Length: 159
Length: 159
DNA sequence: CGGTATTAGTTTCATCTGTAACCAATGTCC
DNA sequence: GGACATTGGTTACAGATGAAACTAATACCG
Image (cartoon, rainbow over all chains, first blue to last red; front, side, top):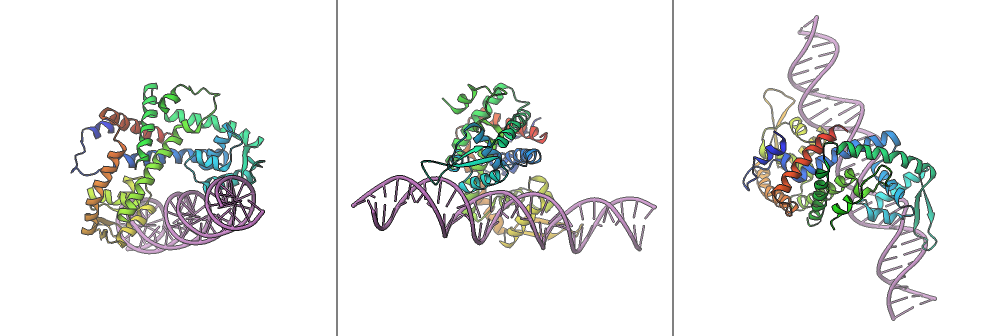
């Protein structure tokens, strides 16, 4: 019997003990943590890249010319995290910042040729890891998963 | 149209750009992070309790007499994290450690009366937050979610 | 214009987290 | 029973993270 089935047999009455292993917020945290850690190690080993750095590169790979603020808006990272990731990427020669003609505070960010070369190598790795995670799910499962995550995210905003 | 539906219309071919917002590991991290942060704030405000401390109390509430190692085995926390959470709970008078008769290294952990009183107040809050997260999901959705998380966790082990 | 409020981004500092080193008690093997 | 490995748990140190203060440039408004 799967653990989902085991859980299902145990209806959570109000006075039943709260089992951490069945508690959704806990399960989500454990799952996301396991995935993030495994992926972070791969990116670090292969490219010396942290997760925040990878996120910045992933955005710039699709949308060159974003500012740091725009990167921060597009992710759950705050501006401090973005600033640090960008600094580190610039130091590594993977990203360049160019002054914005209209606003002297802003810096337009983009991948350098070296950064773009690395980007083209990370994307297939990312796809492979995602595929490995989804290997046992058919198209219907995947659609259901996407939909559930959307709904949970919306609900999480109300917490 | 839901964002899941939007995603579905955009089949991820090997050469399509990788969109961070559709990338499962990223989505899981963002979701789990949003949930954890919201809940951590509630526990902190209401009980001065961190997530690791809450996890320890949740385990001890169901299984008094666990050792720190057993707590570490039952969660993704390592023994250092458990040690710190336990220390803090003991300092706050919420957990007590008693010497194990058979093995002088081990300490049997359990909630103090004060800890148990807090525990009885947290559990309903935890259930309420979980219910709020699941509010829009019917029984079938919830079973599917449980099952998907199980399968993703299994797949995550292979990364 | 000139003063004040905003915004972009960085720096600072305090806390958290993780890895490794460590100490003490027990188990193992001869 | 004594050396050595193992286990339970803590300590120490380093790097990551987050909130708030700060700097510099722009926008707003009289």
